[in-house]
Amino acid sequence: MQTCPKGLLLVDEDEKCTSDLVEQLVESHYVKVCGVVNEYKEIFHTLQTKQPDIVLVGVFRETELGLLCHQIRFYFPTITCIAACDLHVTQWEALIKNLGVFVLQKPISPSMIEMVAMQSPSQGIVPSMTIQPLNTPKQQFAQASEIATRHLSVAGLSQEQHQHLITVYGPKGGVGKTFLSRELAIYYSLQPLEGGKNRVLAIDFNLDLGTFATSLNLPRTPNLFTWVQDIQDRLIQVVQRDGRDPDFISHEEWQEYAASMALHPEEIERYIVIHPESGLHVLTSPRDIRQSFEIKDYHLYIILETIKRSVYNVVLIDTAPDTTDATIQALFFTERVVMVGSPVVDAIENIHRILKLLREAEYPEQKIQICMNRLQKREMFTLEEMKAYFQLHPSQTLLTIPDDDEVKRSINTGTPLMLTASRSQAKLAIEKLGQVLIPRSEKDEQFFDDSTHSRKRTGLFKWFSKGGWGLR
Image 1 (tube, rainbow, N blue to C red):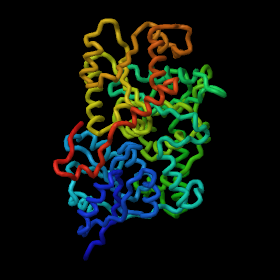
Image 2: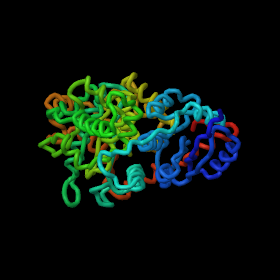
Image 3: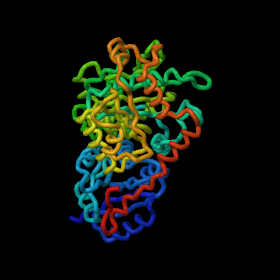
Image 4: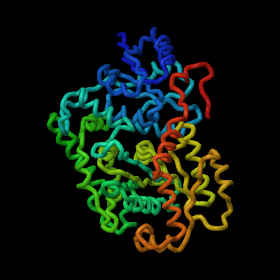
């Protein structure tokens, strides 16, 4: 019995390489190229109109490969998505696979694509029922494309009021990451804004052992799990309307149903707690560790995309010191990452390892700001030695937060440094960090935007050329 070839959509900004690949696959009995997309803005519309079985995803200047694959998997869960990893990047390969994406190691040949085509299941049926009406399918996936585009205006914000998305991450626990997250969130909450004050949301993405609420003496209810429960209840209602039993729905099918869900950003207010002294809004982590087991990737994606369309000027995510799905989503979701460490051997080594991993995956290093916390006057390693070990570019800064008694007192009392009259060195250093992440002047802001997007990106399909590609 002859197998019908599966439709393959090529998505890459390099027109010559996609053209060459079309020629290589013309004789394939397993894959038939049904379309080529070379412009980022056409991706989601073409996926909806072509309905391919497989999409091979390349690189676009407007976004990162991992983020694009994640968005395609979420909005089109029945389409097999393929990305690629370097032969030596085995750790990053596992992270990409956690997103539900096939990973091919370079150099890639057409036969490798055919093997994926033979393994991938037939295209399923996207549920017809939606949580909230999105009018026509064309409008639905136009909205998906709009959400995925990084620099479009956010609902509720004017064109001038850009939403700043910041993730605070540290590959080693106990380095003061949550303390810095708290202080930065309070700092931004107190900054003046034309026509009012900053609207700031802090999210505790340490789903197992998050302590952001504790650090501000806030209640833990409602919380992120409260929101997840409501999302899941809505999904169950849709499944039951389709005459199906929720107990027999697979993870992939839940993703399909979730892909049709559109939440109103105003719903966020039901699940946040407010810090009265600063007005900071906080989406806290679950109260019980066991509740984190029920939080799935599609729950988090719905929450993050809803937040991205909200009226908040600044969104700050405090993550766990791990590489779980929640942390991965937070790293890809934001425009800036504060990588927190301390001047001790194991913390320095962990930062070195994660930087190596991100570089091999072509994660934009301009997004990362390293910050060494609890720095004392005499340390075993100098800042220059740490910069050299991290292989930072001479133009990149390594910011520091000095250790002092005011920090310890602030942590123990639950009173943020930013709300005290103290002018300790730690407080001044955190204010400087906040200004680096969100520059005050338009000139500084433009410089950051230009540097973030100036790096030349290599297209996926150049990996088919003789000799493959190497680390940069």
